[in-house]
Length: 224
Image 1 (tube, rainbow, N blue to C red):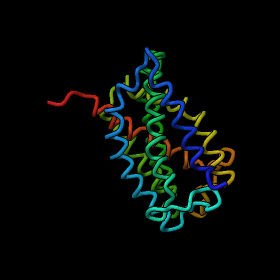
Image 2: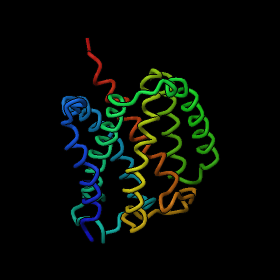
Image 3: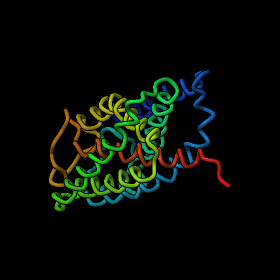
């Protein structure tokens, strides 16, 4: 069905739009901080996706996307870069409002350092696999930047939010990768899958979430 990818995007967006008006959370008042970063990060991811699509590292199945394409990519992919980080930041703010465990403050830096070292190692050992190399290299840069500059209270809440976000991530990406809406060249990745989802997609989502969070927190700060 050609509306599959569009429906998945709407599935991501609509609950966030509805619950943004929760009286305690009031996420709608923070939209002004979300969209500048989403647009900036989305532009970078669009370039990344265009390069991968151009080089057939992945491709979009025309049976499950609309016919309109821009720079080889279906319009739904651009919606993805808007709606998915918006939903991720909503999860982050929900946890900030309703659940802030102290133990995450202690784990924030060690967990980040562990995944930073792991990402560097995987990137170095997979130079011949484009998706793996680029994904884990950018993850290394993003995690390194976050390790050095983000305070524990933000980094700890990120990891907690990332774990929670895996639930909708697995639901949406299971559909994307099992139909499949997105077809991967497995010569360019580790061909390790969780269900039908490539391992690299989890790291891709981490980069998208964390980079948008960094932008979001920066825009929230009062500027001189």
